[in-house]
Image (cartoon, rainbow, N blue to C red; front, side, top):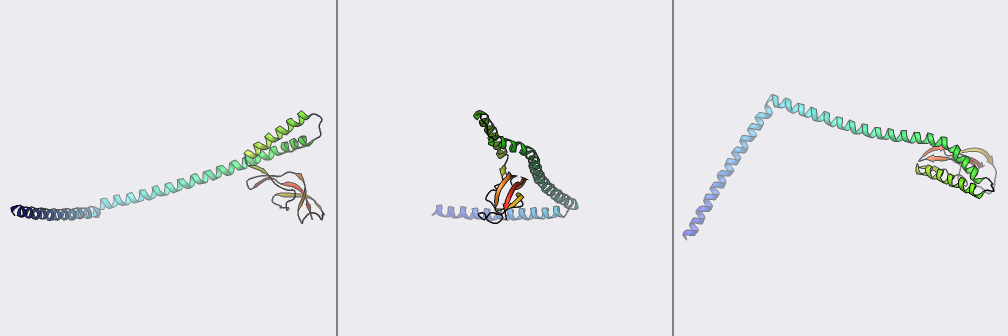
Length: 187
């Protein structure tokens, strides 16, 4: 029984201590809140808070501006690269035309013909590696954005505005036309 009483006394003491601690914590919390309130009302602290907000705002704006600059610079670089590549390829296309003519020419020397064909293949592989593609023409419908009509014929076996013959191949880089294909179109 004494043990039971002792336990009860200990529990009550602990409860009293907990209540006392809670009151102390509440008092400390109130004091801290009051001090924070006093500090926030201090004009010097308010000015520092304003300065911090202004500096943070400027930093955010600068970061956004720099991000936009990086994006704009990357896009300009891509456009410039594409433009330069188109200029270079357009200057090289006549060489490709001549290689195709040489590969299709009649010759007695098989090794010579094979050499020209290998050079032509290597040349077209290099252009393909840069994303240059040939514009499909024969059998397709005439498209003024891709084809240049040099002649019109009437052929009942072909559909309206269908391309019958190709005089010169056309090439494009992505969606940009480097050189239009010269074609003969059915009326």
